[in-house]
Length: 346
Image 1 (tube, rainbow, N blue to C red):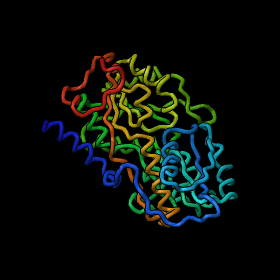
Image 2: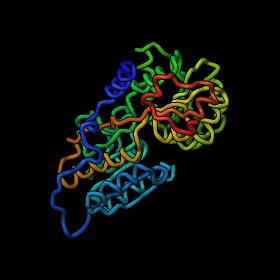
Image 3: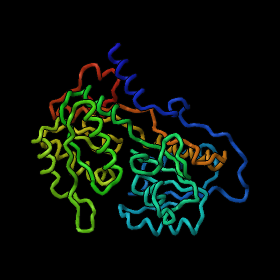
Image 4: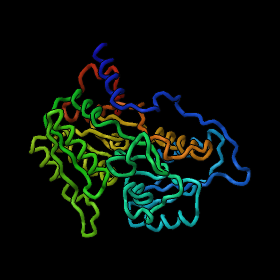
């Protein structure tokens, strides 16, 4: 019992954020809203609507906050972002909500970009699904963003993720597959390597191939995964990578299973794609938390520059039992006391 409580507590402490102190579904003080029109919000997504957007919209509906949401999707094509920047500038919505690191950078730019006038600067922006807001250059400081941008990160601290992997199966080397053209993934890799130097494990990284236009491709993934396994990787770490998320179920995880390499998921979507183990935030809750921050800006008139960027602490440690059986890697018995088992539990 003590061992179970110790692990659960350490995982929670490793992912500190204010969300844990709020009731589920945070309440914003109801301030008067103009009777003339609802708040107008642009929501820009990377690959269509997800549970994040459902949670975001449901938050306003449940609280009777009148909003008009304009949905825009780039369909995996960052080349569409400059036109959206111009559209947002013309339409002048009250707020913009962005999905993911690439979309957020394409709309708001880096905080230290010398040519920030190319981006949306004077309209409040709330992002979600950004794993490393500081590392990607979106904000200089999580507690004090210092610009009209704030948001919600969806990924547990790397320390907590590594601890979860180690608790399931000890390791000396972690393999990582990522998109070299995604700033978010590069930031995560840098942080994971720094953690490995401190904790004494090696990170073996391989990137997806890219085409002539610099777009990631899934060609050769089984060969890449085999190389990671041959190099001694004990885990395949799946970072919060947008292209990886689109290929995980059909290509990446099947290759890992074929190679006998257990996959660790950093996000709920990657866990659902078939990873063995994951420490994840619920996308729906991420969307609700982002909407809470939007309500602070719109209703409570709090400047986004003063609203901290935060991460959910209500995380789920998930184990895919069918995958565990296939790999012959059943979890330690004590994990059954606190982990969430998914798949056929028979």
